[in-house]
Image 1 (cartoon, rainbow, N blue to C red):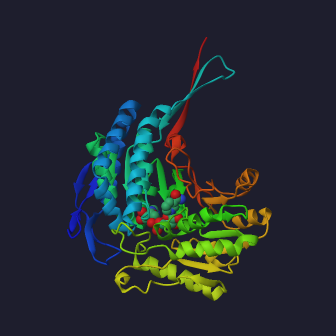
Image 2 (cartoon, protein in one colour; image 1 turned 90 degrees about the horizontal axis):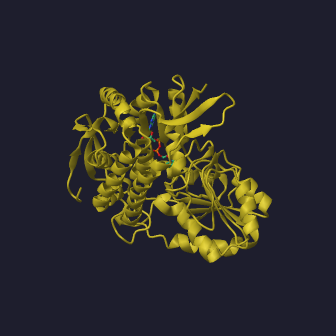
Image 3 (cartoon, rainbow, N blue to C red; image 1 turned 90 degrees about the vertical axis):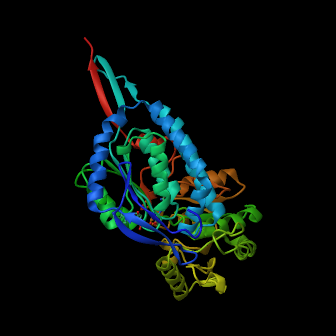
Length: 481
Ligand code: NAD
């Protein structure tokens, strides 16, 4: 979609584009109309699931190498539309175009990875005591409903769709209300790569209607959900009566642990990027910045300098580091947390509101915001804000650092900055989190498992682990005389 055009985008039911209920999509940065999307009704959910159920046996019986070849073809399809998709993501979410390009690159890498990784799906021959052969076979789990949030709409859709399809399952993809467009392009690309029509539906729509119906429907064998912890609980409940398989990638409130021996010239700007990237709308955002007291002043000087250097602006401008938030209502929520931090006694060191720049008034922008004098139990330090808000909390020693990192009921991600390898290992073992990185901000790799502990989730995405989690084990014992 080129800037200025207003498109009317239909939903995709079992390979066919059709009309549904129209929703106007707003471009965050301008407040203008981006497109109209046709959303699914419950009849569309029913049709998509009926067709997926019919298609399941044929897709499961398709040789894995053939399924992999189609995914590789789909990767090339995304590659051809990469710049179009990056602009679409930048305009739909408000994320800087450079970040949107990186997201599309990640999606292509994930398709390529699962195109090859499908060859690693193997069962076992087990040495049972009874005479004969025992085969633990891996079979596709069945129809998979994939429910996706708005912050990384394409990447998250792909890291669910690629392993689910590779493992032999039809998919019904439910993008977020605000950002359905790239998922619909993905649907077209998967179909063009040869994946059977019944195996690909993309149903934009209201979460509590379309998403809830998918989660509860007995024809859905597995729901893979990424989103907020509260909705994750609702999905788990909806799938409970049928004992549905559920994978949950939920919220985070992760820590960046900065030890006195860290290279502060590297750690401080990285810590700023780890909370202001994607305007803080990142489940891995390390918003709790834990700093050893002896270097607090030196760290803060560098951290605030990096905060001041963040260029807030138009997402389509190549030099922009941080765009607007996704919507006005989300901006109000984030500003509400900032007010709450002030009331609780935290000291505002930077930001704290919408930018004064009039050119940014049309969008739901929030300044990069930093709080000092934060106590771990303050609401701003406990709840996921999902905005560009950092809170700096000092600690005295390693034991206190680990205790502070664990003083939240979420456990998704985090970083440890130190030059002492033994400390890095001790702290990594002590912090309860699904992913951690040492001297780096990166905790998502296509090749490595990713997911949360505590209230951050259930199950793992990415890597060959995700592929296995889209299968079920069937044990077949063959008696031999
Ligand atoms: P959200 O929970 O509001 O919505 C996520 C998806 O669920 C959307 O598609 C929505 O339509 C759907 N939904 C809403 N109600 C539903 C219901 N009752 N049943 C089924 N589906 C329903 O989340 P969001 O605001 O789109 O995204 C932000 C959240 O996502 C944050 O909490 C963030 O941490 C989380 N997230 C987690 C990860 C991760 O990998 N752990 C990655 C990205 C985002």
